[in-house]
Length: 172
Image (cartoon, rainbow, N blue to C red):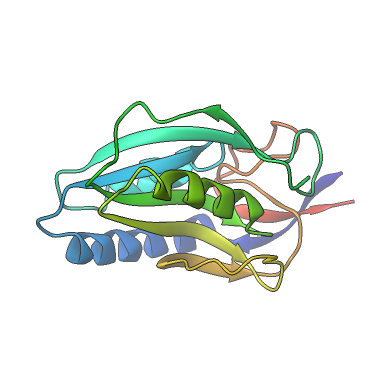
């Protein structure tokens, strides 16, 4: 396998995250906002996104798995690391790197919803077109991409390639 064509450049990512950060700033003005990054992939999105949010925010992390060593979701979700903070009464924004089937995110959303946040929304850098197996309401979307397997900017192939500054298709 090798890196194929670049789908989203480093410059496009930076511009879009700045726009998303501005929208989040406007939407959550005066609210107690907690951003929750889904590890490991969303760590780069979270780091760059929070630099564009002009509010006092709090951050936390969750780690979930539905892929294992595969390139397609298994549909079986495991929480590997839960939140360190209580979210009851807080405005929570889940930050994702990519949404494909939506099964993992729907599981995570239901898990957090029972903890009674004031609001629960989703921001993702990438949304794969046409792959959602469950309806997912995503408030902030960076880019819609084709249903290819992609790497870079936090996205990996068996733990590697996360450090690419852009998003590219993985070729066979």
